[in-house]
Image 1 (tube, helix red, strand yellow):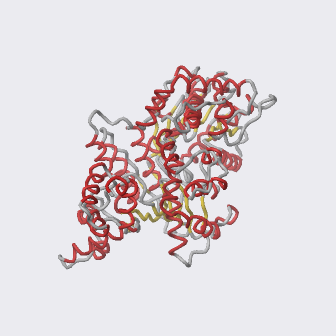
Image 2 (cartoon, rainbow, N blue to C red):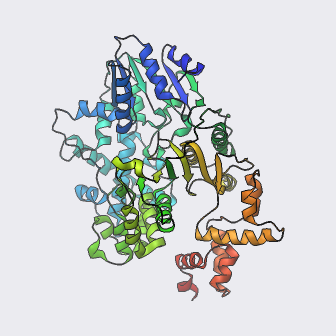
Amino acid sequence: MELTKEQHDIINSAGNIKINAVAGSGKTTTIIEYAKARPANSKILYLAFNKSVKLEAVKKFADKGLTNVQVETAHSLAYKKVVTHTSYKVRGQGYQIYEIAELLGLQGNGEKHTEYIVANHISKFIAYFCNSNKQKVQDLNYLDVVTDEKARAFVTSFYPYIANQSRLLLSKMDKGEIEITHDFYLKKFQLSNPTLYFDYILFDEAQDASPAMLDIFLKQKATKVIVGDTHQQIYGWRYAVNSLEKADFKTYYLSTSFRFSQAIANLAMEILQFKNHLEPHKPFVITGKGNTSETKVKAVLARTNLGLLLKAIEYVTEKKGLKHIYFEGNINSYTYADDGASLYDVLNLYNGKHDRIKDKLIKAMNTMDDLEEYIEKTEDRQLGMMVEIVNEYGNKIPEIIRSVKDKHVDGDNKEKAEMIFSTVHRCKGMEYDAVQLVNDFITEEKIKKIKADAKEGIANLSKIYEEINLLYVAVTRTKNILHIPLQLMPVEFPVSPQIHILKVKTAEEKQQEAIVTLQNSKLKKPAAAILKEKAYSVNKVRESHAGAYNTWTSELDSELTQMYCERHTLKDMAKHFGRTPGAINKRVKKLELVEIYG
């Protein structure tokens, strides 16, 4: 591949630099060429974001004969210094919530499951501290990262206790009384102010580095190169910071993508402009020079495990000819939360079968209501998604999961898969010939609503930016074709041969589609015809769908309550709200309208 002027400028640069590289811009190639241009006797460290990237980089540097480059992750460096030749033992998956409660002997205060809620916040507080650049736990205010109103109220009431117990658990790890976590030994490494004896340090995927990792990097005397994409930061939930913005180095750019066409580049730029609805942002220029016509490798990408699992269920139940599928990462991870609770545990709680629940936390819950209250007070999104799946599919889940797993192939046979399924977090750095997006990403309409509803500024601005970044990352995984739901498209964005607008598929949206067809029949032009036109703006189609995708708000709940009290039928209410009778019935139960109003 012929190098661009931007790449040559980076290779010929001197001193500390940072490289803002768009998706598919050949940053790995650039880094390799940068290393090749350095003196042969210089010692170079390449810091990879995770183990899979590390293994790929080892091969690429070896293929170029660069034996003077050492490839590591921040954790592999820390492990060698902190764990090797010591009595420390590392716990692979971290501590489950009930284990923290047992280790610290946490006590309840009469309220439901207080000890487990406290343990959950201790786990998060420790992760927050270990990923920070602070010296002590008390240098942080954990409330800074707690956003949900009920969770904040709980943490405020128990803050001294949560902080003290967090320090106690860290002390137990430090003394070797219990196994240490990966976060712990990286933090201990950072606190030791290590010196890395290299002439050059190349830090890749830096937009998702933790403050602890960045602190280690910035304190080195070596010539430093930090590489990433400011708009691909998607690990804020792991307390990552956008390190490119933190490093005060001369900035270089890689703005040409060799992965996708200019049509996809234009869409990616428009999605990034969603941020302008919140605060002014400079336009981000991407040139797309990809020209593949392959459609062999196809992927379905989702924002959440729930969205992905539901789409996989749709595929295996509706597309009978589909024989082989593949999930990026371990397929079991999509039915298990990080703390060990499984979808089947939640299902057994749903059915009142406590004797079959394996996870101690779930087993401690008396009802699904107890679990939902726990979720509200801890912001446990993974458990929240499991509850949604169980509420949606109930006892059909075992059969559905079995049908999904029956079609799943292992990693060695990935090329046999007719469709690959992945969340955006799991497919970071990957690319596919054709990509279909699940309709669970943030929309421009929702961003506008958040801005309009904000009275005193938006408290979670960084989280909304990250949601926009997730959509940007998902769109830029494709090399050729993108299938994207209408709701995710920017207003007035023209379609192209590479961008296919998806008709919606959920039961509620199918009903609304029928309503739209009726509306358009008055114009003697059905909705299907609109979608098949060669050239149209998304905004025109969206006008036909006005109000079709409302979420349940307090205003809608009030309206539903009034209609229920007026004894409207489920069918009438479903028609009024543009939803299925089943969805209305579920909301009636959620609001306990039967119990309250009879």
